[in-house]
Length: 219
Image 1 (cartoon, rainbow, N blue to C red):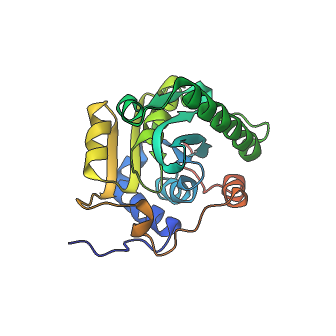
Image 2 (image 1 turned 120 degrees about the vertical axis):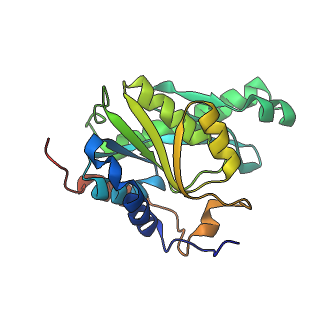
């Protein structure tokens, strides 16, 4: 039996997640928040770990007329993950898929430029990386974020979230992706149900958190 909601807001979820993960501090990981909702959660995790903090921009590929259902996701460096089973089941055409990807790729580039400006992403080569979101549903965005981090040379990657359905964790771990989740409810309908306040994170909030990151350990 769960006791919804579990978290006051994303910052509270991040503080709770950070306490769970404080043992990783010795690894000096880089903490990446998935834009946009994962960024305030990641900020608090980075504060707990005293780690470098950055944004990773990903975009869900929503099914036409039912955009909350994702048939895949895209990330920076042209990373892409598609759910071939769902695509076949829904009968999505190559043209429709390509049109959706092109639209979301343009939005991804816009956000990456808005959030970072001319600043390059934090270097990940040889580093441990913690990818943080406000929760998992299908896991597509977490998977594509993992691919981006590995592509940038990360030595080890873990996905950390406040809440996820068990089948999503099983699927990601079946792909070799380690997942840490505070709550793994058997009956899962939506990430937002686990928050008192699940208002959409704004671009301005993301930019503000990136401009004023938490202090880090010097090593």
